[in-house]
Amino acid sequence: MSEAISEVRVAVVQFDPQVGIRHRQDNLHNSLRLAMEAVTNGAELIVLPELANTGYFFANRQDAFLHAEILPDGPSTQAWMDFAALHQVYLVAGLAERDGMQLFDTAVLLGPDGFIGKYRKAHLWNREKLWFTPGNLGFPVFETPIGRIGLLICWDIWFPEVPRLLTQQGADIICNLNNWVWTPPPLFDASGKCMASYLTMTAAHVNNVYIAAANRIGEEQGERYLGCSLIAGTNGWPIGEVAPADTQTILYADIDLASARSAPIWNNLNDLHRDRRTDLYDSMLGYCYHPCLPR
Image 1: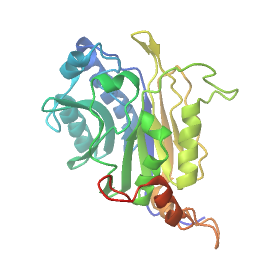
Image 2: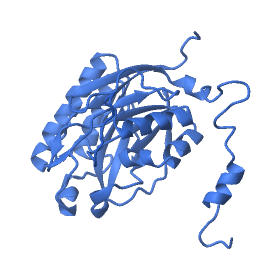
Image 3: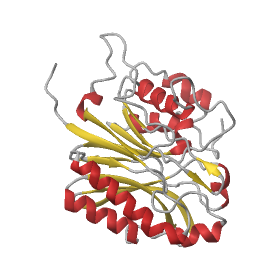
């Protein structure tokens, strides 16, 4: 086995943040406490769920607005930044972002030197569309000393273009922040995995990229959450276990991030990225056309 070039211990945190202004401080405290547990166990990249400091089911847009904060100066972001700097780790967390009168479902990437960047959720699920604006930053990949990090949020994983665009930009790992909710049954197969687990595994497999997916658990405003957090390898299979549906937990994986850069070459003739027929796809899907240009 070749020596690891960029070995990183990744942790995904699965817990139960609750909506409501009165819960914000407890949510933040719990996220930091669990992140500290991850650091104690050697984690260098820690992934928290979507809307980790606020909970998910806002009563209305005004309620969402009251939960939101300005980036990067908001109290939760500052607390997470201080944590990342103090412990010399990278932290990914989800929150409601306020930008003027617009609200975004946002993921932030923080590191030892402070704020690195953010991603605004592009694909809004269900009632999110009533208070959030769809993301307008595209799908950025951030260069860091430990590797290239891409971000996506929850419903994004149902759209194969998102992990594909991130990996086409060279992402070594995708951090996937989630609030996967219960949908009409069947929810789980005999092994305890939900459909979102398989979508995550498939995206990792077809793009040959690591994906660290952190979901939440519990019940809130009558809605339940699926758990099933996981860390998928470049071959798609989970590294270690898939988290249970109803248990607070932290999953760990020791990953050589640099190995993602050679992973697409399965043999001398098969390379997932090289074998793509973009000459056919672009014209069929219309990606290369601007709405104002004649076809």
